[in-house]
Image (cartoon, rainbow, N blue to C red; front, top):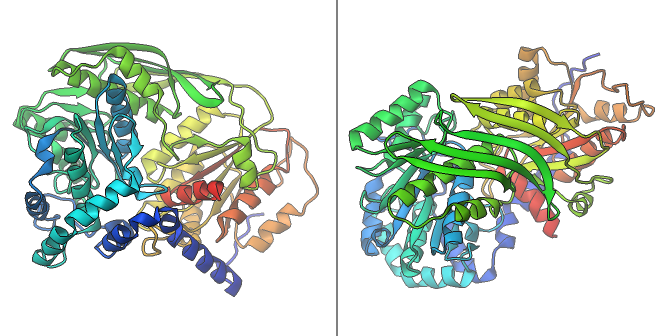
Amino acid sequence: MLLHCKAFLTSSSLRGIARQMRSLRTLSSHREDPEMKDLLDYIDSLKNYEKSGVPTGAGTDSNDGFDLGRMRRLMDRFGNPQSNFKAVHIAGTKGKGSTAAYISNILRTEGYSVGCYTSPHIQTIRERILLGRSGDPVSAKLLNNLFHRIKQDLDQAIKEENGCISHFEVFTAMAFILFADEKVDIAVIEAGLGGARDATNIISSSGLAAAVITTVGEEHLAALGGSLETIAMAKAGIIKQARPLVLGGPFLPHIEQIIREKAVITGSPIVSAYDAGNSLAVKSFSIVNGKPCQICDIEIQTVKDLKLSCKLHDLKLQMPGDHQLQNAATATCVALCLRSLGWKISDESIRSGLQSTYLLGRSQLLSLADAKVLGLTGATILLDGVYVCKISNGVMECVKCEFINTVVMIVWIHLVAHTKESAKALMNTIKMAFPKARLAFVVAMACDKDHAGFAQEILSGAYVETVILTEAAIAGAATRTTSASLLRDSWIKASEELGVGICHEGMTEYRELLKEQPVSSDSNFSDGKTILATESSLKDCLRVANEILNRRRDENCVVVITGSLHIVSSVLASLDD
């Protein structure tokens, strides 16, 4: 029988939420080097849209948009350091960070000194700026020295701009100054929001090596004009006169047309990673040097605008999923594009750079030791399956899908899934990699995400045995946090629209289910319904997921922690404690 229970928060649960919010608010600060205290205090005093949310129209090229002139005036004050290096500029709804990492590693492998600027970060703000041939985060000492060197100028700029200079603008300026100081050969720069009015879009045509647009999806709708079309126009704002444009994709035809029309106006040659002449295939999952990876083929053969060619067979990517294969293909196209412009980049450097790329929280599989730290007893990692995805005439299809029947619990931290599109990609990957596994999701999301759309993609993608909803502070504050009870309402609505059975709150009834007698492997103690629950504590979420999945130990189990970068940050921080 479907349980319908009124939402309520007891005083103890409220105290639990408060404790978790305090813990998460201090997460980034207590992970940072004390040497950076002055810098962190300074930029934390500035407007931070990651904490507060972005105003309506802020990312559009309109009167409501961010004032790019303010950023130009700030950079003029520091001698326009962005004119001292070439840049690859990346915009897109999803895949920017991974694509930036792939490109940077390819260039480093070839021997170039590379600056990489991305956002947001997971554990330390230093992750946003990578420098040199090592690819390590900028040191606390270097950041601190730069801050004290430019503080007086920052103070004056903020005063002249009536306090309107933001956290992101200051840190972007610092990144560009460091890239110039360190004399990087090239910088790979991720746009923060949209493209046209983003603070990173002060790169001139002469300084741009290539522009990249990975995807266009319905995220930050209000900030980017309210439609996919306006989002596409905002992201196309990074295209510069006569400079190459690399498209990731896939795109809806009319959205791609908007981007292509901008490229035609600027006389920019176009390279598409999703071109019909390219072939991408994920052939298998494997364990290499104790780490899971997917074995892939990437074949690029473009004939329009720029003629590019590269074949990479049996490529070992450390980040799983067909979306990561697409990101790797996009990075490959960027490397080939740069090569056509005179940059020395070998096929072997492309291969090695792609294979060495790994990012915290991007489809990360935890080890047995990590799972035990999180209280997931009996969890282990064992991947041994085969699936093949091929792109043919712009269509991706799953050709084969198998999974060895081995009793295993897999813990998957999935950073990027917080939109309908990324949730769908996540479910496609899970179905291909673990088609017979029992699934439990632990989800936290920001308030400006499509909660119902996200829930619909998860619930329609496969049978999910358990969904446990929780809260996560966003950028160290509760301003954009969505309460677990509000998330639950969205999941209930999504289940009703899909006709999916849900057994939901409160937790008392949920725990009563757990007190039932042990069940056999061919029975389902929730009668085929998805158990939906809320917990204020991440630890409790994982404990409940473990209790449910451990009721039947003769089947594969996958725990997916997703929905927000900040819940991922909390998990990874707990592993370091």
